[in-house]
Image (cartoon, rainbow, N blue to C red):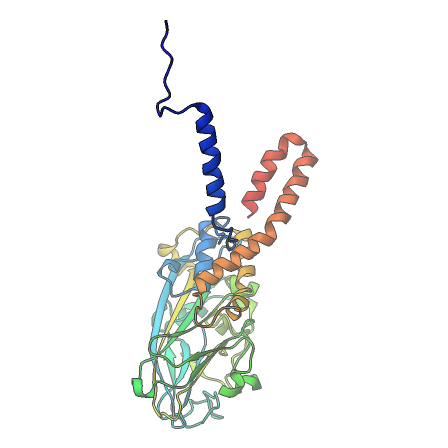
Length: 396
């Protein structure tokens, strides 16, 4: 007589079913309520070049941004360069000071104008005098870290490319108070023109108070522990491309590509190594209470690309990703809005803002791209359906 197989737990199948029913009921009661998750921070739809470009323009001080390039077409091999300039800013005799930034590609060009302790012009952001010389207490900061000089960048025959030509990928500045704890008071106003207009010529930015009234300006408290950041990047087609010598009336634009062919600074001109210095497109105003000579540490980082005969031995491949470039540029426009909506006590860093902005752009683009792929697939027949959706994924 065959033996019946015993239940390993000495329980009948009916008992197991009843037990499972009870356990499921307990799990349903004790399960926590569903909490909606925040949108996924999507960056996987970008090529490696576009992803590094996104990091570079949102957080230029991030070590991962080194060797970034602008993924536009047509792409050519370029020399990728990154360098920093470090200098001090002091408040003048009235407790006010400023820095005006002129993003520059030449090692002997001027990257900034900064006040010292002897600055006497009050709250006016005026670097130059009517005789085209520096105001008392204002210093020009030389862009020593760049790999090429002004003479190398502007040399060449009309109608031909330069011996070496460059473009700026991104430009960032960090301002930190390094004075005494006793005098740790005041405010820092930062402003970067979204369209690279001359900030020294606009009436609203000629004083520190006027600077703070712009909706794009950011205000930071003077603090030893929390530096203040600002940055900009190439926006227009001319800024994203390498220039030809006959494209511009003044070849100084090959040295100062963000100046919009404007070489005036608060109404006057300043010459460095035979080249007019471009107009400033970013500025920082500092008030340090009634403290004279309050000291701030300023660090500037520039990411750039160069191409041409002089750069031949240092060229590396560049990947073109026009879709990725457009997506990153669209996301970058959202960064100020995201920053304004943050809780002041819990601000995100710029790279976190960029990832959130990319997520929003992807969310808006996905239905459009997949609908286009669906239309393409059905117009070619159902056999093309799956390949059409795979193509949509590559668009994002």
